[in-house]
Image 1: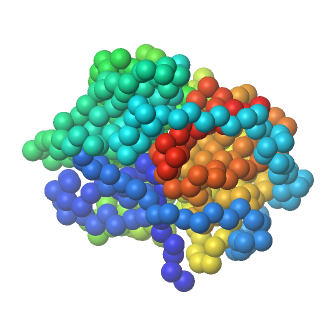
Image 2: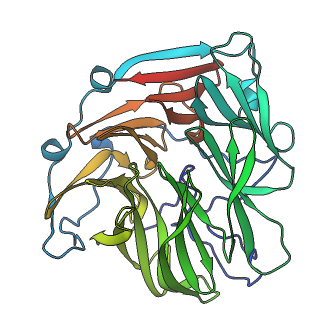
Length: 427
């Protein structure tokens, strides 16, 4: 059956561009999300997808009920959703109110291509309108405030990753070079426009970057190795997390260990996945192992050997959230939740997540509770403290994932059609 391939916007796991390293290798893989580098002045937008959160609407095609935890003596026990993580109404349990602020008299929403974040009543957004990447800020509570440009990237520059974490903005820029490989850098941009380069490397293929509460995680390839490093957001110190031998044959096959993306919602540690291959194609073959890295002990342990690869992976020290990659038509459940309790991993499926509706990001809302956003513009609350979950479908559709952000306990999004900045104040 034909495998469904699709793209997620926030996780930015990028396949290398054909010919960028000059060796002519085939890199047409979809497990590593193939998001083309954005040239300043360009735009990436995903397909519009109709939402459906009903459990009956998706087919549970996964037959694997026994999994290897990866730890000796640890069992994976499958539970029903009602037993492990029941669903509760969103409005009743998590929504305090929805506020909307009209901004049409101060800003053209057509110029707001991506909402980066919110800090101290100011929203920060990217615009490509002026033939280049520009970052603006706007005080949305000041009636007479006008948008102010704080940063610009010259037309023709290539950039991939962008994120706003607390009061800083991070941008990965590919540098122009005649030498073999792909030099890149990560710039840290303060909210008044000051720029500091905090990381730079040469990579044989386009790097992957994802953010944690206190670190950026960078995956790159160089000299026959796949390397993962962490960059501290406060001190900018670089720490190697993992390094694996990896060889490509020039035909799309790999031998060795590929470090796939991961994530985490707590500052103490994060999850990532290793795919082991023996002259195999990453998109269709290889075996997976999920690791948890502890920043305090500076060690990584295998916590799960799933029968399929991840398309999304995150969680906290005591729980794991996955969206599986190994699915085929028709629509099937992709969401998995694991509760880590001593020598047991209690597991259940999450029917809110399925093919074409995977999680795009998951961030900590408060201790023991995380908020996520899906490809079909739905909010998912995972309340591990109370062991329950809840889903909310945003009524104003078509905003793109890059226009929904979590900041200071609120979920902000843009209703472009009605020129409104909206935010959900959560309990």
